[in-house]
Length: 232
Image (cartoon, rainbow, N blue to C red; front, side, top):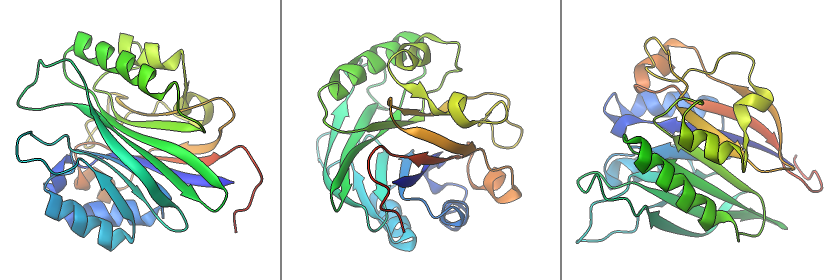
């Protein structure tokens, strides 16, 4: 079964919802893992334009939102979702967490996790340690993607890379820099996949629209999931 996944920090649609939509819709993703999703209203509007179902931070009048989201397009649907807030509280005004969604279609289930790590190295390391514990007991393939705010040689990425496959290393054909979009020099956005999920192709779109839509470039991955191939 084949699956197209896009990982994208969209900077709260500050450069225009239409631009983000044009970039994302061009690739017809099955799953979108988003960071910095802006207001709830903008995220809902974007999901409608993409014709995708959205899972985001549950509404609470007492806590600041963690602005990660998982979007899925038909025939996939969201079975369940929850938000895990990371325990490190260095950034009370900008909380970090993981949006964990179980998604499915007839006869198949998997997990999609959207993550945005903090700016302090220890905060990031503690977060991926929590995340590793969270997903260890999940049944089915687990895909983890997002803005990690660090390069591949740093501790948090290395920690997760010892437990999952860094998709870019399996299918990327260049250095994979995603930030800043105007002149990318750092690979800080990632997709991690488990054993058994094949990465058939993964790219960083180089076009002008992608450079204008956000300060990050998206990652676009073509995956093959374990199990019978029932794709059309």
